[in-house]
Each structure stands twice: as C-alpha cells, then as structure tokens.
Amino acid sequence: MSARTMARLTRTATPHTQWCARDHTCGIDTHRGRPIVTARGNGRAVMTRTRAADVEYAEVVIRIPLHRNENTARKQLAILLRLLGELLDAVIVRPRVLPGRGERPAIGRRAA
Ligand SMILES: [Zn+2]
Image (cartoon, rainbow, N blue to C red; front, side, top):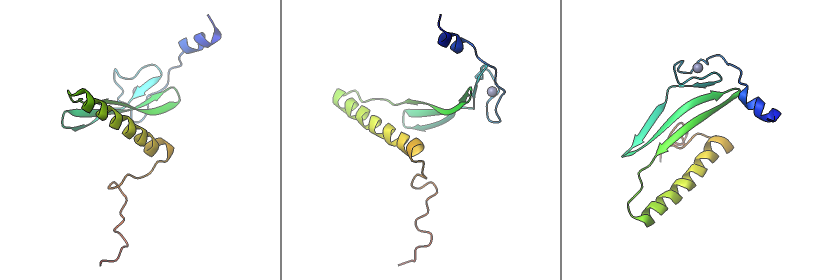
C-alpha cells in the first residue's frame, strides 16, 4: 500500500462550521449546510453548502425531466451543457451580479 493511499484513509476531525446543519449529514471532516431547493415545473435543483477538510464548495444536484422525443431530449441536453458552462463562468471564472439581482441600470438614468 502506497503512502498516498494511507493519506486518504487518515482523516482529521474538523469542528462544525457556523452554517452547517450539525446533524447526520456532517461527517468527521465534512460538514453540510441545510439544502436549499429551487423548482420550475417538474424540474428542481438542490444546493448544499459543503466543507470537506479545508475546501468549501457548493454541492448541486439538478433533476431535469427530458422530453420523450429523442431529438428534443438531445437538444435539451445540449442547452443544459451550454448553460452549465455559463453558470460556472458566472460563478467561478468571473463572479458577477446576475441581471435583475442587484444591478440597477435605471438608477442614475434620467427619465426621457
Ligand atoms: Zn457540521
């Protein structure tokens, strides 16, 4: 057994965070906040703030119903992949305020 494998098996307990649920979803070195759900139609996304060791991230599970027509389902998957890329860009690569969520372009503009 290599030293690298041994390192993975050894986990150091970390204390609960201010935001974690402090329930069975927390582990020795992994802490999770309460899941937040958003839904549209029959689709839904569940986001959970998570801290594993010294790394913090958002865990997202998305359930999207696909159309029965194979071509339409493939188009949906292509749209999903493109939008997931844009989502990662917006959140990780260049964090910004999304339109309608804080940007107030009308403020300071003179009425016509
Ligand atoms: Zn915890």
